[in-house]
Length: 348
Image 1 (cartoon, rainbow, N blue to C red):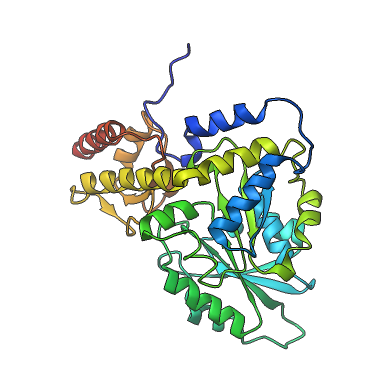
Image 2: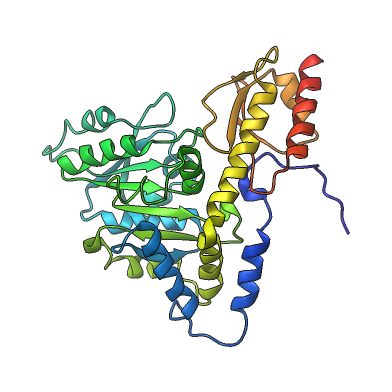
C-alpha cells in the first residue's frame, strides 16, 4: 500500500473519498442488467425523491459533473443568441470553467463585483440600463452560486428577493448548487425552502462534493423549461449510458438526509478550524464561515511552510489569502493537527 504524501487535504471537498453508503448503493445497482440512458428503476426512484425534496413540478436531469450541469441548466433558460447572464465576478461559471458557457452556449456573462460573493437585487437592476439597445446584449438569466465561491450563503429571503428582481424584469434565476447541501445545513432549512419556495427556476444539486463518486443533478422547477433539458444534456456530452450508477449515488444522499449529515459535518469542521486560528497574530479570516470553507490571510512564509505538508488552494497570491476546505470525512483530529501546524508556522 502506498502511503499518502499529505496527512489530509484541505484543498477541496473534491479530494475527499466516497461515503460508504454511496459505495453500497453503487454496488447494489450493479446487480444484473438494466435499460440504459435513464430508463432504469434507479433513475425512476431518483425522480420521485427529487419531487419529494423540491416539489411536484421538479424535473431532474442526471449529469456527470458541475460544469456540465451549469451548461445544461443555463442552456435550458436562454432563448436568443443575444441573451446574457448576470453573475458575480467570482462565479464559478465565470472563473473556473474555462469559458465553457461562452464557448458552448455563446452567451456573454455580465459580471458584477461583490464584497462577499453575493448578488443583490440592486446589482441586478443596475445592469439593465441597456435593455432595448440593439447594440448591447440583453440580460435573460441571473445566476448565483449557493454556497458562493467565497464560502458565504444566501438566506432564503435573499434568494427570494433576487428571484423577484429577475422575474419582475422578465428574467430567470439560476442557482449553481454545487454546495447547496452545505448552505441548507448552515441555514437549518430544507432544500426546497431555499430553492423552489424562494423562486429559483433551474438549479443544480451537487453530489460529488458531498460524498458521491461522480455526478450532479440539474433540477428544473419551471415546467415550461423542462422540454429542452434532455436534448441539451445529450448534446453537451452529459448523458451517461449506465445512468443507474449515478442515480443510485444521488438517491443514497437523499435517503434519510445523508446529504444534510455529510454537509453539516463538513461545515462543523470548517467552524472548528476557524475557531482554532481566529485571533492568531498575523492571521485574519476574510469572510464569514458559513459553509465548509475558511478563507484566511497569512504571511507568505507561513503559507510556503504549510504547503510543504498540506494541500490547499492559494486564493489570492499577492495578498496571501488562502482557502481551506473541509469535507464529510474530515475528522476533528485532522483539523486539530492542521491548526497546530498553522500555529507553529506563524511563529517562525
